[in-house]
Image 1 (cartoon, rainbow, N blue to C red):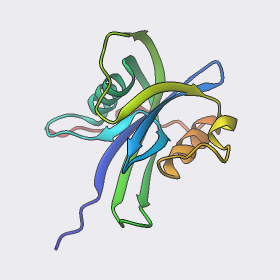
Image 2 (spheres, helix red, strand yellow):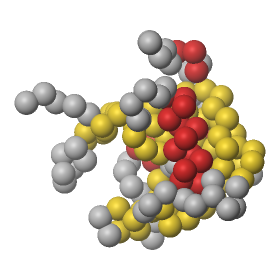
Image 3 (cartoon, helix red, strand yellow):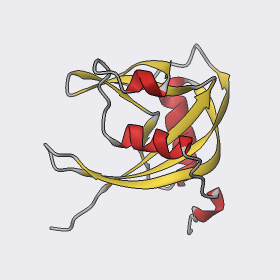
Image 4 (cartoon, rainbow, N blue to C red):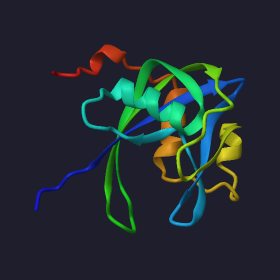
Length: 148
Protein backbone atom coordinates (compact mmCIF):
# COMPACT_ATOMS: atom_id res chain seq x y z
CA UNK A 1 0.00 0.00 0.00
CA UNK A 2 1.30 3.45 -0.94
CA UNK A 3 1.55 6.04 1.82
CA UNK A 4 -0.29 9.25 0.92
CA UNK A 5 -0.46 12.22 3.27
CA UNK A 6 -3.51 14.48 3.12
CA UNK A 7 -2.53 17.65 1.22
CA UNK A 8 -4.05 20.64 3.01
CA UNK A 9 -3.81 24.42 3.11
CA UNK A 10 -4.40 26.99 5.85
CA UNK A 11 -4.77 30.77 6.00
CA UNK A 12 -3.10 32.88 8.69
CA UNK A 13 -4.91 36.21 8.90
CA UNK A 14 -4.20 38.73 11.67
CA UNK A 15 -6.08 41.92 12.36
CA UNK A 16 -5.79 44.02 15.53
CA UNK A 17 -3.73 41.28 17.24
CA UNK A 18 -6.46 38.72 16.57
CA UNK A 19 -6.45 35.81 14.16
CA UNK A 20 -9.32 34.71 11.95
CA UNK A 21 -10.24 31.22 13.09
CA UNK A 22 -13.09 28.79 12.60
CA UNK A 23 -14.99 26.91 15.24
CA UNK A 24 -15.95 23.56 13.77
CA UNK A 25 -17.32 20.18 14.69
CA UNK A 26 -14.89 17.30 14.17
CA UNK A 27 -15.99 13.84 15.27
CA UNK A 28 -18.64 15.48 17.46
CA UNK A 29 -16.19 17.81 19.23
CA UNK A 30 -15.97 21.61 18.96
CA UNK A 31 -12.45 22.58 17.91
CA UNK A 32 -10.68 25.71 16.69
CA UNK A 33 -8.70 25.78 13.46
CA UNK A 34 -7.47 28.21 10.88
CA UNK A 35 -9.55 28.47 7.75
CA UNK A 36 -8.15 25.30 6.18
CA UNK A 37 -8.93 22.32 4.02
CA UNK A 38 -7.89 19.90 1.34
CA UNK A 39 -6.61 20.74 -2.09
CA UNK A 40 -9.11 19.88 -4.78
CA UNK A 41 -8.11 18.41 -8.15
CA UNK A 42 -6.81 21.00 -10.59
CA UNK A 43 -6.37 23.89 -8.18
CA UNK A 44 -3.20 25.56 -6.98
CA UNK A 45 -2.23 25.94 -3.33
CA UNK A 46 -3.02 29.66 -3.54
CA UNK A 47 -6.43 29.02 -5.15
CA UNK A 48 -7.25 26.37 -2.52
CA UNK A 49 -6.38 28.71 0.35
CA UNK A 50 -8.52 31.53 -1.07
CA UNK A 51 -11.43 29.12 -1.66
CA UNK A 52 -11.25 27.44 1.74
CA UNK A 53 -11.08 30.78 3.54
CA UNK A 54 -14.17 32.04 1.75
CA UNK A 55 -16.12 28.79 2.20
CA UNK A 56 -15.33 28.58 5.92
CA UNK A 57 -15.43 32.25 6.96
CA UNK A 58 -17.14 34.26 4.17
CA UNK A 59 -14.06 36.53 4.08
CA UNK A 60 -12.11 37.22 0.86
CA UNK A 61 -8.46 36.27 1.48
CA UNK A 62 -5.49 37.90 -0.23
CA UNK A 63 -2.36 35.73 0.23
CA UNK A 64 0.90 37.64 0.70
CA UNK A 65 3.47 35.02 1.75
CA UNK A 66 3.95 31.43 2.88
CA UNK A 67 4.73 30.88 6.56
CA UNK A 68 5.67 27.24 6.26
CA UNK A 69 5.02 23.66 5.25
CA UNK A 70 4.01 21.39 8.11
CA UNK A 71 3.91 17.60 8.40
CA UNK A 72 1.89 16.09 11.23
CA UNK A 73 0.69 12.59 12.07
CA UNK A 74 -2.51 12.35 14.11
CA UNK A 75 -1.68 10.34 17.24
CA UNK A 76 -5.00 8.46 17.31
CA UNK A 77 -6.08 7.74 13.75
CA UNK A 78 -2.49 7.92 12.40
CA UNK A 79 -3.50 9.99 9.36
CA UNK A 80 -0.69 12.21 8.13
CA UNK A 81 -1.30 15.79 7.01
CA UNK A 82 0.95 17.94 4.84
CA UNK A 83 -0.16 21.55 5.37
CA UNK A 84 0.97 24.62 3.46
CA UNK A 85 0.16 27.78 5.41
CA UNK A 86 -0.19 31.13 3.69
CA UNK A 87 -0.49 34.44 5.48
CA UNK A 88 -2.20 37.53 4.20
CA UNK A 89 -5.10 39.86 4.71
CA UNK A 90 -8.82 39.81 4.16
CA UNK A 91 -11.03 42.62 3.04
CA UNK A 92 -14.58 41.88 2.00
CA UNK A 93 -16.92 39.92 4.21
CA UNK A 94 -20.13 38.43 2.84
CA UNK A 95 -22.49 37.85 5.79
CA UNK A 96 -24.99 36.17 3.45
CA UNK A 97 -22.49 33.47 2.41
CA UNK A 98 -23.39 30.15 4.08
CA UNK A 99 -20.41 28.50 5.78
CA UNK A 100 -19.17 25.00 4.94
CA UNK A 101 -20.81 22.00 6.55
CA UNK A 102 -19.35 21.42 10.00
CA UNK A 103 -18.26 25.04 10.45
CA UNK A 104 -20.14 26.58 13.38
CA UNK A 105 -18.76 30.11 13.06
CA UNK A 106 -15.79 32.28 12.14
CA UNK A 107 -14.19 33.96 15.15
CA UNK A 108 -11.30 36.36 15.81
CA UNK A 109 -9.02 35.18 18.64
CA UNK A 110 -5.76 36.35 20.19
CA UNK A 111 -2.87 33.95 20.54
CA UNK A 112 -3.43 34.03 24.30
CA UNK A 113 -7.06 32.94 23.87
CA UNK A 114 -5.89 30.04 21.71
CA UNK A 115 -3.65 28.73 24.50
CA UNK A 116 -6.32 28.69 27.22
CA UNK A 117 -7.24 25.25 28.57
CA UNK A 118 -10.87 25.63 27.42
CA UNK A 119 -9.79 26.23 23.80
CA UNK A 120 -9.37 22.92 22.00
CA UNK A 121 -7.27 23.26 18.86
CA UNK A 122 -7.85 20.86 15.97
CA UNK A 123 -4.14 20.03 15.83
CA UNK A 124 -0.79 21.33 17.07
CA UNK A 125 -0.26 22.78 13.59
CA UNK A 126 -2.70 25.59 14.47
CA UNK A 127 -0.40 27.18 17.05
CA UNK A 128 2.76 26.26 15.10
CA UNK A 129 1.49 28.26 12.12
CA UNK A 130 0.61 31.27 14.27
CA UNK A 131 3.93 31.20 16.10
CA UNK A 132 5.85 31.01 12.83
CA UNK A 133 3.83 33.96 11.54
CA UNK A 134 4.49 35.96 14.73
CA UNK A 135 8.21 35.09 14.50
CA UNK A 136 8.23 36.76 11.08
CA UNK A 137 8.68 33.62 9.00
CA UNK A 138 7.81 34.53 5.42
CA UNK A 139 8.58 32.71 2.19
CA UNK A 140 7.68 34.20 -1.19
CA UNK A 141 4.53 32.94 -2.88
CA UNK A 142 6.48 32.41 -6.10
CA UNK A 143 8.15 29.46 -4.34
CA UNK A 144 4.82 27.67 -4.89
CA UNK A 145 5.09 26.39 -8.41
CA UNK A 146 2.01 24.94 -10.07
CA UNK A 147 3.29 22.77 -12.92
CA UNK A 148 0.70 22.31 -15.64
